[in-house]
Every structure is written in C-alpha cells, then in structure tokens.
Image 1 (cartoon, one colour):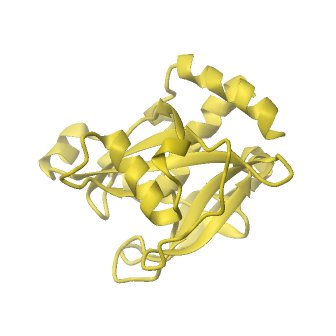
Image 2 (cartoon, one colour):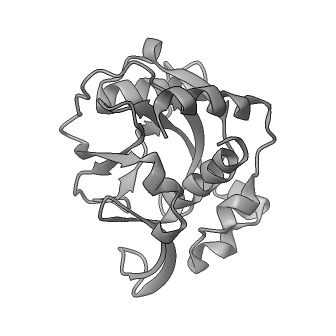
Length: 213
C-alpha cells in the first residue's frame, strides 16, 4: 500500500478500542503464560520502558515499518529484533517522551517529526523485568536514519505488505539465555525471526491495522 493511502486510513485507529492482551496472547511463547497474573508482576516491581512502532514511506512511497537489530551484548535481549526504545530516564516527563527520546537516540529521528497516533497496550517482559509501553507513530517525511552504533547493529525496514502477510507467521524452536529448544510463535520478516515481546506488540498493531486498511 502506498503511504498516502495508508496515512489516510491509519489515522482512524485513534478512535478504535485497543485489542489488548488477547492480541498479545496470539504470539505469546508458552514459557511466558505463567506471567499473566498482574499480582505476580507487581510483586517484582518492574522497571519502566517505552518503545515506538514507526511507519514511514520509502523512496517509492510504499509503507514501511521500522525495526532494529540490537547489538550482541551480555543481556537477555542480545542480538534480537525490536523497536527503537528503552528505559525511562529521570528527565523524562512521561512514557511518550521516553519513546520519542530513545527513538531519536537510537535511529536519529527527531521527536518533532513523529506524529504519535496511539498509545498501545503495555506489556510485561519477564526475563528483563520491564513493563514496556508501546506507541504507534508516523514519520511522514523521513530523513536517512542514523544508528546509535553502541546499541543498534542494523536498521530493519519491513514492507507493510510483508508484515500483514499471514504467510509470514511461523512457529520456530529457539534456544535463549533462559530457555532451551522452546517452540515459539513468530513473524518471519526480512529473513529474521521476530518473536517474544516484539511479536506480541506487533500482533496488537496488526489487529488494529486490519480494522482500517
């Protein structure tokens, strides 16, 4: 879909109810189901973070979604696909500010150029003990991305058509720092297996987009 038509339609999601956790559960790894209890999560007193799902046009005016490949490091999210974003800093007045600040730091997009359309459903990430607030944003007049080389390995630009294609939903066996040979639902995008929290947030975005596109 060209970005001009996409933008006209996607703004309608402002008036839609969020699909919420039910949409997350469609892409939830089996190992995570024990963390559905809000009381259990509250006991861990999770840290806060925010991320930005950014849609923008490519040079041919086709709609794309921005993901990033994180650097390899000693941590549970090493070398994984995710959204630009990160933890709350003391200077952040709210979570939207966090998402915008982190997006600028990681991929070089000025907050002034992002139109935040909707606050999505927050999601708890057990391995890192973060409660993450996602936002959906529009970057209508994109400039070249500038990655934060200490944290971002690669920009992953996903065509909207690939994201919405049901054939790109897969099941994969993965081994991580905290689980061995676990079967997870995932998206196969640009050759990458996108699973876990990112896939769960993408699932909610996809449910919303299906209602307006």
